[in-house]
Length: 143
Image 1: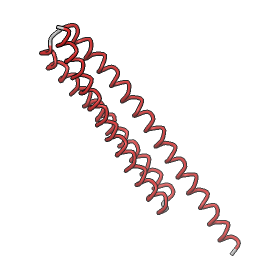
Image 2: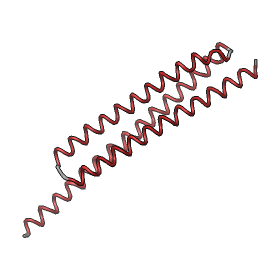
Image 3: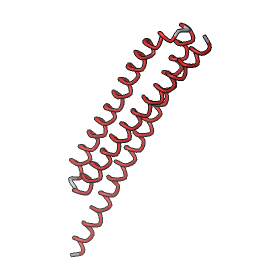
Image 4: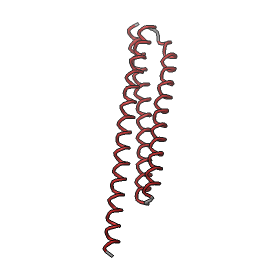
């Protein structure tokens, strides 16, 4: 009976440690994705401003739209890669521990990460489009 209790206790500790590892990995990945997205947005906005002011015409928005499409593809690609890595980590964790609790936590974490990544991508695209429109209006008024 004592051995059984010790076994349960140690198994619980292993589960807690495994869950903590997964959560830490996910938090780090989310931070990295957000940083990458912010960097991409800053670079795209800088490129948009340079292009608009260099050409000096609103017609240059076609070039800007192309830049935006490329940036969006990059961001979505990064997000997809992150999700794939997390799923792989999750599969490894589940195979090692084989506990229902870990599976549930991992599924919840993956869903949260996917939602966060999608929201970040949408916000980035909206912000960039708004900045492009504002810059185009300012340039048109200036001319």
